[in-house]
Image (cartoon, rainbow, N blue to C red):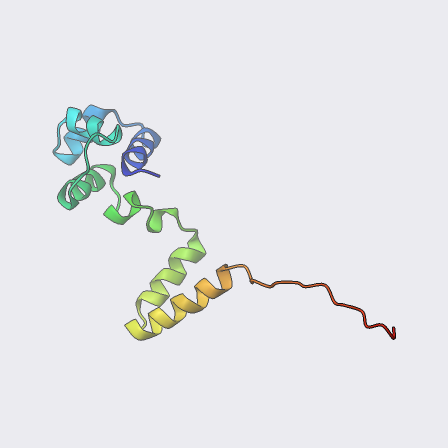
Amino acid sequence: MPIGDEIRRRRIAQGLSLEALADRSGLSPNYIGSLERGQRDPSLSTLEAVAIGLELEPAELLGGVGDLSAVGVELAQLVDELPPATQLALLEFVRSLARPARTTLTPRRRTAGR
């Protein structure tokens, strides 16, 4: 989902007007509107300001932990405590589980004697 759509979705879900979010984030309503319409690409500092206005972590605007289930959040917290090499190995393992197995089935040929 584009970042502007995510900002709009979360703003509306919280019942905030453009003006209210602008006031809470220290940005202008016109600027937030242009973000929501995809007319501007926000800088990291702008994402942080919008996230503060929405009372979220900036990563949540990028499809981060806010979209995880409770199990996903707990798993992420546990993995975050592991050494980086272990994190990478675990990530590769989980990716392998998530990918469908690629098996090619070929029909067996019957031999003449059977």
